[in-house]
Image (cartoon, rainbow, N blue to C red; front, side, top):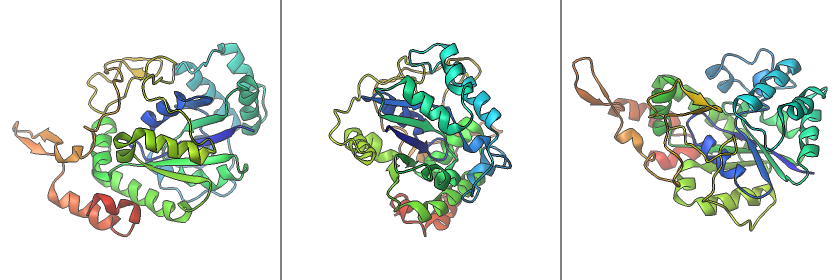
Length: 301
């Protein structure tokens, strides 16, 4: 049986990049976005902060029709066809009576694929529900420096720093309960951009496919074309094609300029004065609140 892997983090942690890297490896397929079960759960809370701050779910009720409609829409909107037609995807999704049957239909449509990945984000609350499906259902999470992520989220999604901190704390708290689970694996964004081949090897070892010849050159987006990173610095956020903002530079390899970006991030005050976005007080609040979580110690030494 193929492996089914959730790729999760708080937004702006690098999961879009990771999904592109996964998609570009042998016998791997990664939907970004797509087939998001938590978002179809009833009474899940508002997106994005409500679901991010949910406790672990226990046998939630899924609105299956909503799941079908949103999954099909995301296949079409992001051109995630993988060589199939819209009609074939419609059959895969709508000729099924539950989420498990949809996954089985996908496996039948792609018999050579061994790893199916689903980028969800803000969905760690669904971990226990996902792994109930069996040992071939895995969970891959990513962490990025919480200050870098807060700055990026503010620039891209207009999240206030307080909201980013609350989300990070909820993510960190749930992480303590599952971080040693054999079906869970954690990756740091900074390690990925610093040593991509080593990190990707560790990820595929977790998948049960060690010693893979990692591809870091020909990286594909959800639409099968060359990957286009969706930076928070993109000016034109209204024009899209196949789900991608068009005012963006093509992928030209992994880079580290996003690391420690909070130190350089600035804004212009009402009087035109350029000021640092992250002040000492905000830094101290993040450091003090996250101090008890070992996964974040590396950022505040």
